[in-house]
Length: 207
Image 1 (cartoon, one colour):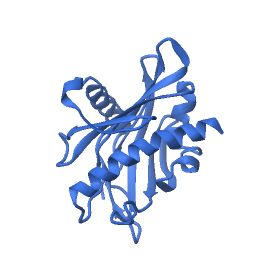
Image 2 (cartoon, rainbow, N blue to C red):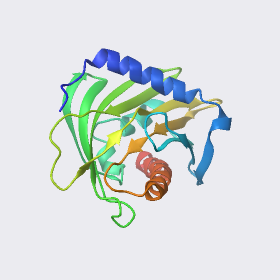
Image 3 (tube, helix red, strand yellow):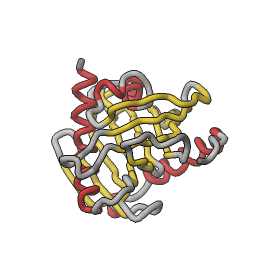
């Protein structure tokens, strides 16, 4: 188990990595799934043998409220159907923490429940916000869970041009689920999970 990292350089490196992903040209992405709420693309990850996913959709609300529902805090567990528990293990500053969370089994439990320990950081980006994270090898793995690993991931949320009551939400996710899994099962689950994330979030913001 690694000790906790110094948060400032990790936060800075994480932000820079996400901004770089955000500047990748459209031609490098391949559409993986399209729904009325979001489009999901993918490209080979530079971090591991799976894919980096990009998801994007318009959400009817202001950026601060949307990000409050996504980042670690009281809202996320209420609406995210995949997340089954979440606790903040360490808080560095108001916008920076280490959290542990668990996810439900997926694809009729072909993918068993997973546990993640993530460093999370929220910061300003253009006229909106970026909330991002990366997994840490920290804390004991709980029984009956496989420890997954999130390579640099995050959500950009900025006001929609010409419509300030709407926001453009763009996510970059590259999750290594680990355990003995067929890559095709992982790819199916990831595309569906990201599309469902938008519809679940929209429902939560309306309540």
